[in-house]
Image 1: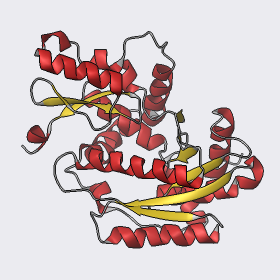
Image 2: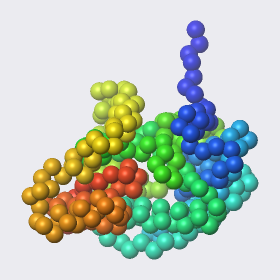
Image 3: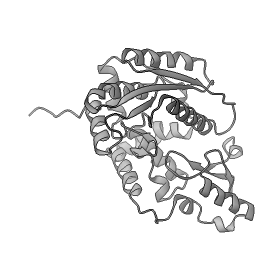
Image 4: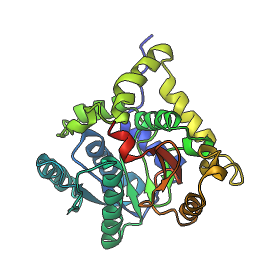
Length: 296
């Protein structure tokens, strides 16, 4: 009996769009493209699905100005968009070096993408987060002490953000890129062990896969289940801050303001060198080491 083949990236994405009702005929979607394999595959897949679903596409890349190669990587994205008949725009943002670099870059990136979507008349922004990204993020949140709400990460849709590849594995993306000979660039920071996410990706997850080959699916299923908690269940802010009542009054007031305004730029100093911030991707409070503690 012949072995069955896993579903293609195209079929996984189409099923996710349909089952999660990510977008429908007539909607315009902005695809965030960096030139890396994940986002290039996303652009290619969503372009192929236009006839089936009936949506329209625009694409945008954001250059953070941190690497000279970034402009050339966006050239690859622009070339692919052109061959797929997808309008492409790029934005350059200014990001100073310093602590919490990845988070500050992410905040500026989403600001630029939302501005681009408004200009292009797109109601949704599609990002290339996939199953492996989601599993990594659940583990990162566990390491940082998040509670149930904080572990409900990277859902298929969160406000104006949609993730058509969130049910697909990194292996499926790599196979799609190879099958369709899609050019891509590799960001060296994705293998830099100074970032905790990279260590989770290269050290922790491979070990867990040896112990439990289905760990990625288990972690993503956990995120799905926690996302279905009723809204009156304990929030991530309460879960990760069980001793908030012991904070100084100024910190308690700042935390209350953070929970109310949900400002992605705000930081609240806690105890033991930790800070709280509002995570725009999960819609919850995240707790992480402050800049001084990271430098040790």
